Length: 164
Image (tube, rainbow, N blue to C red; front, side, top):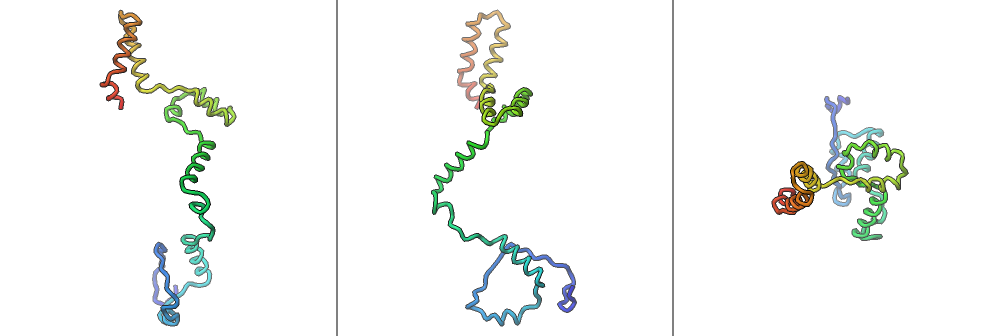
């Protein structure tokens, strides 16, 4: 602590805001006259680096829109993502298929997508249809009647509305 400045606490400067002073509109000697303290050389360098890190920008041409349009850039990003990322349905991930997990560990990257595409996760509608058919088969109905009743239930607007 420099007791000559009567600063008795450790202080922190928050550098969220910056402002500039037009050197043509103010006399530099006025600023010097009212200066009460300054950072030592090490901290001046650190402050300069921090401000540069927050606000500095390398003077290069912007890729968008000078070289490629925003729409074209979006298409390129999508192409790159489609090539390098496999998007998985959460239901496939959570299916608990241990064989799938073992297969994925052993497969080459380009075969992983093929293996994942082979997995069929039934929709809610399919699950309901299978449940209805299973329950009706345990009755005295014929297979044709079971199919007919199941199809009428599945095609009903009430069920479609409920599944939305």
